[in-house]
Length: 296
Ligand code: SF4
Image 1 (cartoon, helix red, strand yellow):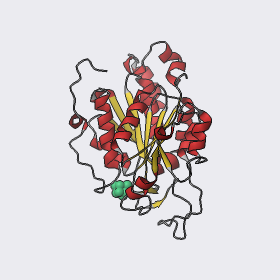
Image 2: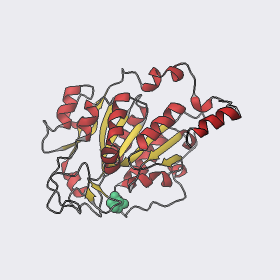
Image 3: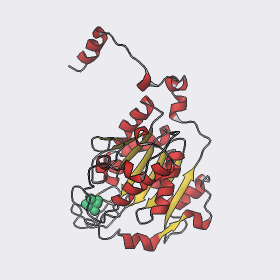
């Protein structure tokens, strides 16, 4: 944290205007991420946001923090590398359900079990938006989309349950229609020591006419309103699998445990205080040639 923090939410905004459809849920997350960074007093130069491909993955263009748009589904491994190279940075991954649960699903699983101290936020709109509305990993069964004209015949992934079962130490869900709660969840995720995962109900107003803002407003319910114990694994799984509150869609922190060891703490070099990004390698010309020749 900076000693002389003097940034406003505008300072985290780039000169590029978002290209999302007016009304897209991504706008709320764009604002909530910036608001969380301001409230936590993390200056822009200490933040990296990494994305993959998709409407939401354009996010690095619209933020004035370090950013990288990688290839489809690969935001998590790139962010992991950045964090391990310099654990003094706040490293966020941002992407959509198609990007992170579908194409990058394998990386999602392993990031949960590794417990690297990064934050993954998924804009979940239940379709592939950028490619104009195909079924994604979270599309509910029976949904008619451009790739499922007779209705999807696949069971959707349950990202909250998968994350908890895979070992994530912070698992939450927000809603783009509730900025205050979403900002607080993102703040808690950034504050969390270890892998933090936030699924966000984020309506695609152009290609999904079912999971709309009105649909979610009618169904969401904050977990804190019914006394959920976020440290209780079984309660969190019951909530995630809708064994309780079947007619509601819970939002808030489902699961969080603090007494764990992060990947960074288990890593031999980092454990010794060696930060790769700040270590002079001083390779000789011969060593550099030998390394580059490996790629020919
Ligand atoms: S297509 Fe959907 S997800 Fe993409 S910008 Fe438009 S509303 Fe948002």
